[in-house]
Amino acid sequence: MKRNNLIKGFLYLGIASFSIGCTNLDEEILDGVPTKDSAGNATNTAASLVAAYEGLRDFNGQGGVYAMDEMSTDAMVGPTRGGDWDDNGAWRQIHTHTWAPDHPEVRNAWNSLLSNAYNCNLVIENGGTAAQVVQARFLRAWYYYNVIDLFGQAPYRPAGSALTDDPKVWKRAEATEFFIKELEAIIGALPARTANDASIANKDAAHFLLAKFYLNKAVFTAADPAGPYTFAAADMTKVVQNVDAISNTLAANYWLNFSPNNNTSSEIIFSSKNNKGGDGGNMQSKWRMSNHYNQTPDGWNGFATVADYYSNFNAADARRTYSTPDIIRNFGNPAGFLEGQMFKPGGTEALKDRNGNNLVYSKEVTLITSGKSLETAGVRAFKYVPDFDNIGQPDNDLILMRYADALLMKAEAIARGGSGSVGDIMTRLATRAGVAPAPATLDGIYAERGRELWWEGWRRNDAIRFGKFLAARGLKPYTSDKKYVLYPIPAQALFNANLTQNPGY
Image 1 (cartoon, rainbow, N blue to C red):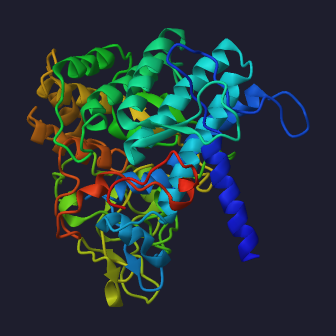
Image 2 (cartoon, one colour):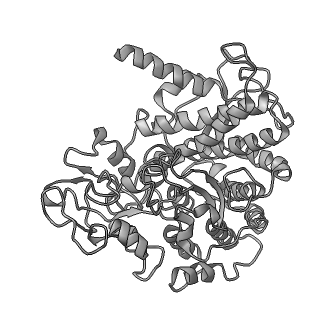
Image 3 (cartoon, rainbow, N blue to C red):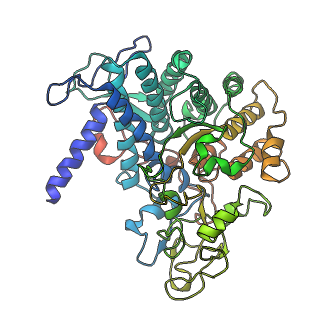
């Protein structure tokens, strides 16, 4: 049985790698994917596009890309709690930069991103409608942006190549150049963002992704992935121009972006759609991965934030916690970061842990916890407000892009030499949060990104760009080897002879 499972694993990795198709910059139609299914029927491009959209839910769970982007930084830690949450040290390895090419979450992220890119190619290469194809090209750019960011290499298949051939591999700079041109080529054909539904590829989302590419271009094209990075003024001006082209506005209430009806927020640029009582896209993990077993909603007593990161928030910062009478009545505690005594629904009766002690969360946390702190170590957090009536199948859409991030990208690009004016960006964000504005300096912008975008999946990307990722911090009291700026290529994927392991692994 173990041998059969291993063979299946290799086959899956082979599909994920061998099925990625791309083309020359001047070609629109890509080869390298089947035109018919196993029964001889023509590819259903509508179904393939649905699958490509559903793949966005892979950014939702507690592992994979999400853990690699957040837990590898100062923002999140997954401590071992007695016999729970060890998983052969997988979560601790991410936080302490000690992962290896056989790490399960690294493998899962690689397979997910490339398999979803394959679904996009099924649409692009098999006669999808013009509307389907332009959406698929945008989604493919999104998936490849994450491959470029995390792994630094991107498998692709040239037009006309045989399915038995090993895929070619773009270098990081080549892939970056391709997808910048790809997005610029399709942006005019994408629809405008639909009010109250940002889950369909749209012009604003393409401008946002272009801004991300241009902002990180210095990182993605550097001779050494660990830097130093030279941010070209022309690239930074492109960031500004793309952000200025976005039609979104800030929501008056920060927490509308994370509530069950968050599709109505004017701030959300691109999202993964969930339907109340239907397929919740595993959104419940956003509160269960951190909450205690006895809380409402009950959780898995897992992830926490680190004291130094939590301390960056002013106590008055509205982004830190969110409370309404309905939230307290249904859950007993606010949304956001949770410290101190936890309560039952209604907010008056103290909760106990499984040993009958008061459930009091403390800022102190270690990588391996035991004793009385086993269930209480670490400030817990859930950023998405649980859907009261549908805890397991909630209505909250998963945010992939929002306007506050775009504004902070603009401020950073100007600080790095781009043309334009920061204007009142920092003041607008601070006023909504109820705190004094952060300075529009690189240090001030980095700190503000940490407060504004906590646990949204951007912390690693930011930390690398600002030169902070490898530095010593609370539970990692050493400077990491520079190889950890990139994740390793999963060991099994190296059956493709054109892939080479990233340096140092």
